[in-house]
Amino acid sequence: MTRASAALAVLAIVLIALPAMVGNYALSVVTLILYFAYTGQAWNVMMGFAGQLSLGHALYVGVGAYAAGGLFFHYGAGPWAGLWLAMLLCVALGLVIGFLAFRFGVSGVYFALLTIAFAEFTRVGFDHLDWLGGPGGMFLRVAQRDTWDILNFRGPPLMYYYAILFLCGAALALCNLLLKSKAGYYWQAIRENEEAAQALGINTFRWKMLAVAISSAMTSVSGVFFAFYYNNLFPEQIFHISRSIEIILGPIIGGVGTLFGPILGAAVLTLLSDGITEGLAAMGWEIPGIKQVFYGVVLLAVIMFLPNGIWPFIARKLKL
Amino acid sequence: MLSVNGISKSFRGLKAVSNASFEISEGSINALIGPNGAGKTTIFNMVAGVFPPDSGSIHFLGKAIHGLRPDEVCAAGIGRTFQIVKPFAGLSVLENVMVGAFLRERREPGARRAATTILERLQLGPKRDLPASALTLPDRKRLEVARALATRPKLLLLDEVMAGLRPTECDLMVEVFRGLNREGLTILLIEHVMRAVMALAQHIGVLHHGEVIARGAPQEIVRNPAVLESYLGEEAEV
Image (cartoon, rainbow over all chains, first blue to last red; front, side, top):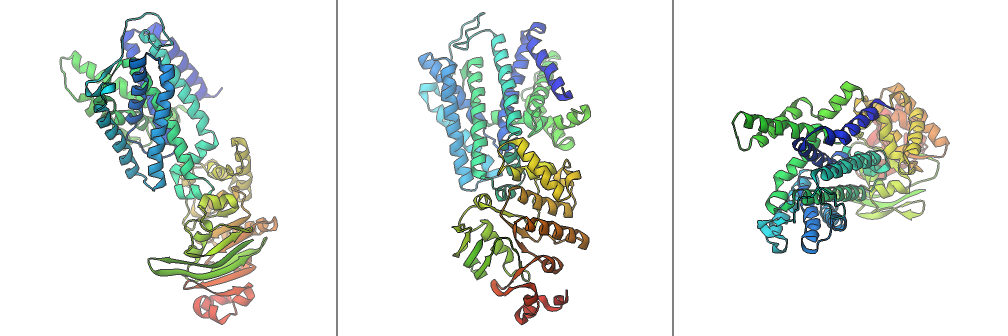
């Protein structure tokens, strides 16, 4: 076993055993970390692997959340049905955006703007969709439960913790597999130099579309989780651009294009920002927006000192 | 094998290539020479599918390839290098070549084996795990060739791969191409370095102002008055 896989095994065991060791608050923080780790991993497929910058990934979280949430709200259908609808809608949306961009040569910053535009007008659209609650929000029925109702994905916080932990593990395994496959090599070639990639026989349009499809499908699952974990959905919150930025901060700080960057970045950001907010509150200071300022400072520091992210640096130091 | 029939290309009214025709037979080494701006790279890009010709046709192995995309041209069996090298800087040397190898290999181990063999052949074996960004220019030129070869082309298009190389490095490349040619690879090179052209090419086409002004064996070309006047000048002594 290599050092890296040994370290991963230790981490997995710690995370599986964690609920027995910590309280509910800590568990909710780690759940949040894992949520961002998973979503960051999904975003990383598009940007980190294939080099296509999406600044509108909140779109897929939101559509996924509303698809599964809506089915549950109106028809009482559990997320196992909603999951498929969420994925289908998100992949379709992603492919429409991808088609428009890649077919007509919209790339780089302009592609990023296109992704923002789609997320924004979807937000406005949902504000006018009264069937799903409109701006007043949609609230899923909540009942305090101690038993795991896996069919309807209702249960104690512990169930959500294990669900998101499982998703994280699955995403990590999938990304690892993708990176080592033809797709991973082709995506990285496209990321590094699209013209050279095409000259080597790569149908760049098709492979970029595949990256978008996989990334949006994965992100839709975070939306489903979000809906059933938080139980209330507001267009203004879920589709907001600050949500999209929050998704990408983890991977950028951890290391774009790496497997562990999104996980490490999510942990660093969530722990430190929660720590700062809590710490200040303990001192009797409540400063609105301190989290955002903190995000900015961390982002600046990482860009200046570790432009490839924290993970490549740590991996080198630990010889993983 | 490759037949180019009367292709023309203008950029904003400026004729870059006009009515150029030539044939390349299987197993031969061919060179396209001419002064800067003669239209060499434009012809090259039309064959490689970067843009289609305004008129005329290009056939490869009996099939029309004008209007195909670069990836389709590559899949059809034409590999190319870039004059201004375009390595995948963030990937290792081996990974760069593996990207090319994946065109004919579905799985990673096969691509890795194929890429390793090609790197050995181009004497890049010891540098396989370096990031491509760490390579010197001569090595980057070799990496371009290695990557194109990994797609297993039947025809290899070389865009000034000798430019910037020292004479000994140039001779080494010439040896590599001779060896590949003996194994059946057809080659078309655009080249300024006459030392390499004379050492390699069996057929030479000379371009001037977008027109093919002479075609023939090297010995004929260096004595052609039109070529001497327009291009070779004193270099003909090489």
